[in-house]
Image (cartoon, rainbow, N blue to C red; front, side, top):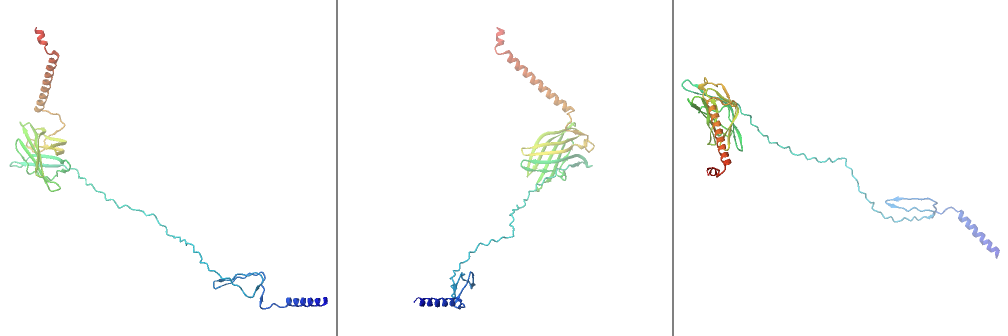
Length: 293
C-alpha cells in the first residue's frame, strides 16, 4: 500500500516537472517587472505589473477637460500720457495813440495879406471817460480873425468818428501894453463849452511861450497845450513871433505894480482890523463907564 502511494507521488511529481519545463502556452502571457503604457485614440491603457493573462484589461478613461489658464497678452505699445494743449490765447492789442505833433498856424489879414497872428503848439482835448482827442496839425484856421485890439483864433477839424470839432481862443489887447487870453471854448457834438478866464498875459510885441498849459472848460473838458508859442498880435512884432515871454517869468510893467499895490493894501487893511479887534477885547465891556465915574 505504501509502495502504491509512493508510485503515485512519483508519477505526479514527474508530471509536475514536465508541466513546468514545457514551453509556454500561447494562451498565457507572462510579463515580469515591465510597465507598458499605450495611448490609442485618446484611450489610456493602465500599465500592469507582473504576470497577467492574455486578456488585457483596459480601464475606462474619463476625459477631463483641461483647465484653460488665462492668456496674458503683453502689448508692446506704450500708452503715453495724454497732454492737453491749451488753445492759444488771443491777446487784445491795445493801440496807443501817437503823441500829438506841433502844429504852426499863420493868420493873414489886410490888403497886403500880412501875418496878423501866429500860433504854434501841440493840442490835446480830454474828456471824462473818453479817449483823448489830438488836434491835428492839418486843422484849418481859416475862420480866424484879427484886428487892432482883438484876435480870435479858431481851429476846425474832425475826430476819428468824423465828428466836427472846433477850438476857439480869443485874445484882447489892453492899452496897447498887454495882451491876454480872456475867453476860450470847445464845440464838440454840436455843444459849445465856454470858459471865461484871463490867461497868458504878455507884454504887447512879445510872444507867450510855455512848456505846458491846461485850460479847464466846464466840468468835463480840458484843453492841454504843450510846447506852445502864441503871438496873437503879430502886427506889433514885425508880423512874426516876437521876443519870447516865458510863462515862468516874473510879472513886470504897470500891471505888476498894480497887483503888488493891491496885495499890500489888502494886507494893511487886515492888520488894522485885527489891531482894532484885539484892542476892544483887551479893554473889556463897561471899563469906560468906571473911568468916567
